[in-house]
Image (cartoon, rainbow, N blue to C red):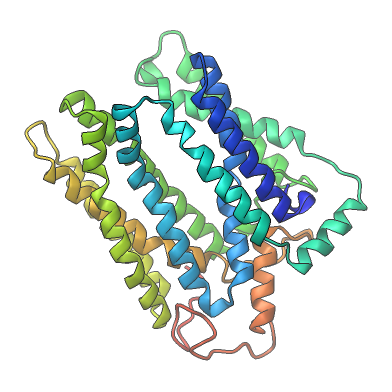
Length: 377
């Protein structure tokens, strides 16, 4: 989509729709309206994170991408950490509508910043002009299968416990599970053969990129799972109000701020990314085990510290895994170029990594010392 619109126009349209849908969420008069506007909000905001990373890869040289990803990761980690406290305060002091309405001035500021500062790089302008000369074929079948997969997965997880999972006598969960599995297989089969897929699975053939995608998926599943379940646990079983639950969640953000510069420094000192990623995953695992030992007789400190460990682990993982993901990604099998392939190809050309004698100097790769560049995980 961003290739057809242009990255700048895509950002402006997405931010405008996100801001408008946030305002509509705040003015919703029923649960149905709120769900509809939240869906629109998610559609508008879903592509902003990968598009932002593509901008960073264009704007920063290869040796500075680790620092750029660290700063980007700081914002990505602070948002779900600070959000519960801010949302709890707004809910207690005003009303729940302000949780959405607060996005309006922020969205307007972001829209103005993108309009004034963001410009499409030359290669994207040329690609957009080339695409305009071709007939536009949208992958409606792929999008339909993707919607079925996501809706089936979401409803199954949301209602599974209420419906007794696979023991559901009305076969609702079983039907959703079958629909999810069949649609997922169909989606993968169709997208691998579609000339213009809505989800391009071909870059996953590169092992570094595939491994990093799995790591990011698992790490953020843990983060958002804890961010969703812990406030509900604190309010339902411990009697905390929304603000108190948020105050227990938010101290972890302080440790993320401390951890990110350390990780950036290590990347700058040519530390092998695999050691950083492995260390971060071990910290996440240990924190989750610590969190699993909670009971009804704990103090707030016994929630704060495991949560802090979880966020620190994610802070250690985020920057090296995002840099490593694009290290060896290349053109896909059919010769086309997606955002991942384009970014990787430009980086490889800049550093002559495809030549007969690729450089192995200490400055060539930002996170691996000379002679120790990992070809893949």
